[in-house]
Amino acid sequence: AQEVVVSGLRNPYRWSFDRQTGDLWVGDVGGLQEEITHVPRRRIAGANLGWPCISGTLIQSGCTPANYVAPVHTYPSSSDVVIGGYVVRDPSLPAFAGRYLFGRFDSGIFQLERNGGATAKASLAQVSGFGEDGTGRLYVTSLSGSVHRLTQRGAGLRLTSIGEFDQPLVFADDPGATERLNHVRLSPWRDADGNIAGVISRFPVGHSQSSEARAGRLRT
Image 1: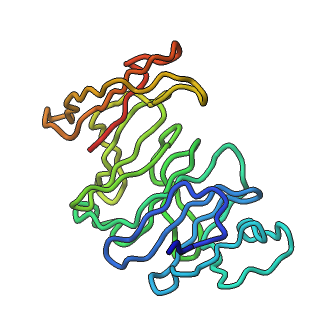
Image 2: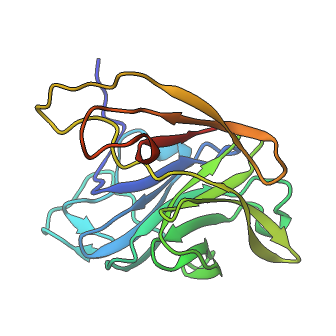
């Protein structure tokens, strides 16, 4: 049977689980406010994050959601939208151990503070997403095509470039078109040291606006 685990989200971009505690963290692009919500593991099932009754901490439509979980951080909505990140469990980032790092599209990477505020830790334009590998190492991507690993210099956060990728624009034809994906070609993607870190999957399609160079996806 289908089950709704969490409700009350507007546009979660993005969400993650703390690999140590199982807690859920959500970056939700708001109508009035951008928000970061922390849902402890024991409260995940049935949790309501408020939308459309509440946007961040502001009343949106006046209803009262059951099982409401309030955000731990908000800021006014604008083009500088929230990009949800991860709780740091990477042993090579001891200065950030147990802290939640997230992005703002125009501004870069921020650390959530215990008082609900946020502190800028690294500048990066057009932040598009974060990733975590099997050992807990964290990565961030930008719409410019850059891929960075989050590393530490002293007590500060550093972005170490590990390569670039073609931002995927087209994976299939427009709705109603008859063309379909015709083949997939994989090529190795190497990090700054020349090690194979993943593959680039390219999906050529028949649509005139597509091209092999514009239809790539990074897979690690």
